[in-house]
Image (cartoon, rainbow, N blue to C red; front, side):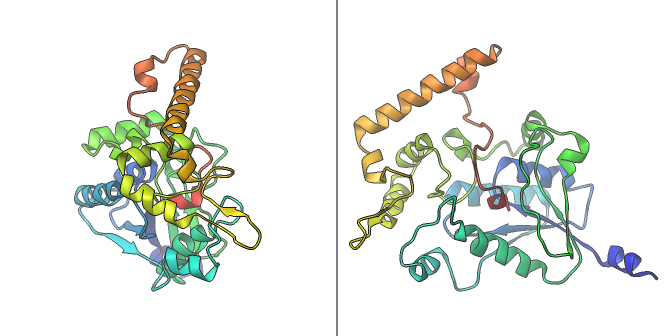
Length: 274
């Protein structure tokens, strides 16, 4: 038997879930196509309750467990202490590396693996997680089969799962304090989970030496954002923007624009969709 044949025979099939619509739809789509698929969720310990609830529902549908993995004893708060309170940001995404990539690659080990990624055919700009390890081969079934956003929604609706409930106010999966959130999503967190918003506020602080502020949003603290007049301003700005988008689209009603809030992820860290 050749080395290629041995590799193919021993290859594992792994689908990493984020708790979001695309990876969940891919799990549904691949369930009967790859019966020996392994499902894994990299748990940062800072996810929304809705995410965990949705994973529980998905687990029942798949008929097999979703492995919940973490970075050992080093959680987000431990990593933050090591970095002297320096919050992660689009320029310094240490949370992605240590809470997503490291646990995932540790779970895979040195086995030959096909890693299934939920990027759609209408997302040519997104790359997602592609490992540099030679034993991990990425595969993009939605791209291969030409499936787009509407197909993803249809797959989830037909399965009876629907989309995760947090899409009513949020456009992506991930930690409740994800720095990629838009301001209107922070408002959604404030109104939906005020306790988590307060927890996110606790991470923000000024540097007494340099005077620099460590905040989740550039040039604005959550304390400032939470002021009633600022919340009203953010909501108004968002409503105007979506109305303009609807007008440009021509065929979208305001009901569709402000209905489910299930829009495409904007600017998010695609690796976080593990």
